Image 1 (cartoon, rainbow, N blue to C red):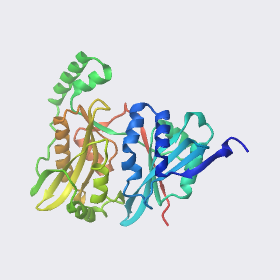
Image 2: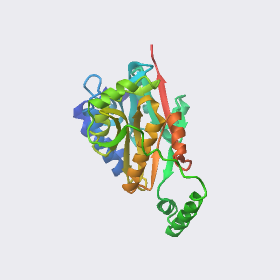
Image 3: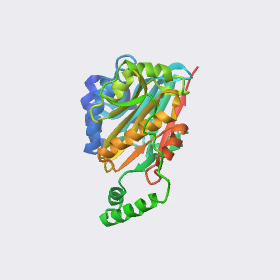
Image 4: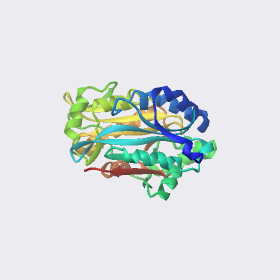
Length: 333
């Protein structure tokens, strides 16, 4: 028997959580490990989408020592009008002393045998290189970004306040030479409101829009409440567009200091894929983030119709940022 034969695969139980937390603290720097621990109940133990009521996490143990883990979370998705289950690979962690033994491949291989119909995951450069060697590399994407305070951004990246002021003056001069971006400040019959809770109007909006897109996570109020109201380590703002008493669309934003106080466009949905509704919500979202002090606004990924609208509203590819990758696997009957 080899040393690796002593490593056993077991399913996570809630009594294992302290061992998992100890592994996370050993592997990651304190800020990152504590963020994962803060998210644990929301993501795993108390996730309302756990398929059998239990979190879906596999552990590799050697005796009493936990050496690796792999967790995933599930969502209902609609594909061409039919509902299916998808899972998102979230946390793959191997103790430094046990790396180079193909333990991550062992965990992923087991997960593939029992996975749902759809799988997706976000990859950074490191995970992309590993998965590419196994033929599992994702599709690259580049985030879009719109600067709001050029002086602050230049100072942040170059550490020079004087250069920031100079860059701001140059860009302000350039803006006066080009036509102003047309603002869709109003749409007849539509009003904007801030949303503090998701009600039945979001269910009705979802039912009206779910067939407008070939593939989409079910965005009913159950999912939206879990995703944006129950998460313990982030706060989100929701602006909604209403026509009479019905919801016509919404957009979710977040601002944070981890990237020099950027704002983020996190999620949106509009009826009939309306460009005017999207533009109305986008203008309000960007101005709200500006009032909150965001130096710029990032949108990680958007499908082509909305990506073109983002270009028209001052967004551009953020080429200086690390590239991300989206991997998806489909196993529909």
